Image (tube, rainbow, N blue to C red; front, side):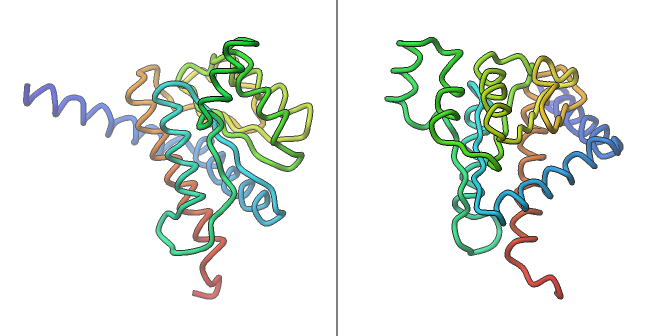
Length: 194
């Protein structure tokens, strides 16, 4: 079992190596930080969505913005779309689960907001529908996916982790999310002359 544990850790390390050497992905992460800075400075909101483990990641990252990351500072307007279970179950029952995020985006999001969708396959229908609704109202879309990007590959910003292994992709999504949170928070709340 020791060898298997070490092998799993090594797989994660190797994927981080691929990520750090992919200049295109690193640049896209940088671009997303700039996008979120502009969004927040202009009084807009960040929305997150995902399914299963990716829903947990969406909620985790939203909390890093609305709560705090490293710096004691004011709350930032960020929320995961699945947190209202009464809404989620009603819309899933009445319209279908594929509509739960699009209807909420229609109801709460505004032009200039950002929607970050998290899906290891990139093929989650409810996120794809939310991206379609977002484009109609001027919400910028960011996709965190696995290697192919799937159908979410047409997002405004695509961060496609170079792997097809779900647990390793999810580990990278949290790493990338933490990088984005840290850099956004630092840019907003520290003295630029430091």
